[in-house]
Image (tube, rainbow, N blue to C red):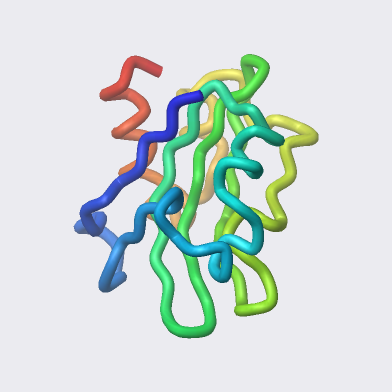
Length: 122
């Protein structure tokens, strides 16, 4: 499993900080990062994540079983960024298809991840 994270603030987004998911404490993740990744077993995951004192937000693009999934990591303090992750039905079969099926508002938030995925050869 490869996890590529944007660790610099995406220029197009109004956020202050970006955090490395695998270095967050269990308090923010809700569960241990390695256990979450082992359970979902993606081929690759591209993400950016930011948090404040009681909430977090970010996006993840996940490729698994030849399908692309998109996950909104916005959460309150009751949950972690990956707690509500659902990999039941892929949104698209290709990255291009995923890129073309989202509205402009969401596309703006995930575009840095799309660019990173393309850079990594997906």
